[in-house]
Image (cartoon, rainbow, N blue to C red; front, side, top):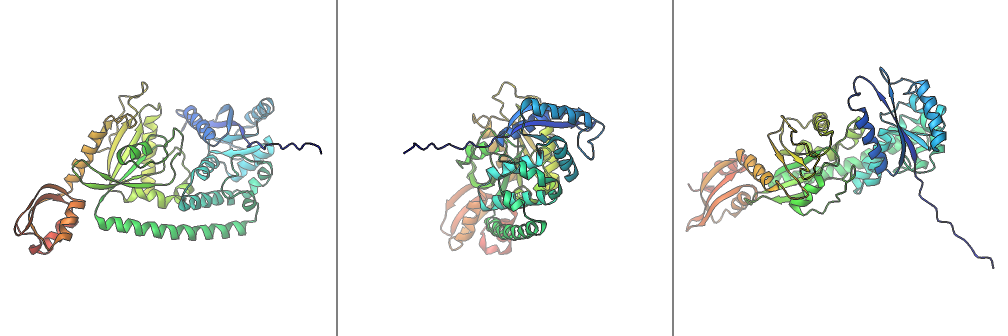
Length: 426
């Protein structure tokens, strides 16, 4: 009998050329933007062959790039054996179709790339639903231009998540899928709201960690709470939010939540799809803004974070900004954040400056608390437990009439004490 040979199928890898248009608005950071696009492409599993920039007054409304640059890229595609191109901006349906017709390769844009990474990274049911919803909404608006591109996909970027079969169906089917996903997402959101409501009743201060992607947010959560969240030197290593209890040195218990990283040109519909996840920043009492001080684009990253917070409706909060990675030689010692309540220079990985961070959090929380002293009768243990959980106890002694206590408490607890004078014998 002849010997059988089995061929191991190799995973498809996109070989791409990155393209961007430099206008007056973005000429100062177009090179860095393409560098970031390359990092996104690498995270998505693609190989970048070349980066091409065209200087124009504005992007071409029909083809994104001018004719001469398209001809240049067509030659590069054949010369480098590229399988596709990725534009640094989100393409309109017309631009997508016209580029596909002109170049005869797979056409992708920054949004598709981010969605693909999200599809790869999502772990929870909520995250998976949100990614699928955002992908279907993105493709629905591009059915006219994506038809021939689908036949060229072959694998790689753009094929994760909903999958080709779902994308090849008609608009009605996709709209039905979107409706169903929105319903599922609402169910998950309702469950999340219940959890938030329970946490609210506990009276614990809520702190959200925000920042540009790959700034060190998950590392911070892991370092101060032993959360064991995946922490990698990659963009969007964390997609699903994780909340852990943090006990401050003065024994005050707070809730600390890691959030998905922000990024330049984060698509608006992606923010909408992930709103229930990003709401962690909206409902937080304090924001810890993590900045990678070793990144040459740190200043623009700070700006992007504040713009995204504004879009989410999470402005006007206390922001503690930490300039992370000061252990690196390339760390910028002159970074400033004038919007922050307090700025610190730290190395989360090395544990430098974290004690100071916890001290700043303690002092900020204490500013919103009121000082009480007196005796809580022994038959009012619930109040004592509430003070222990949400307050900061300075002194506690057992007396004949009850527990003598000196503490800082939040306004809710203070209000309950003042409702009934017999609760606290002063």
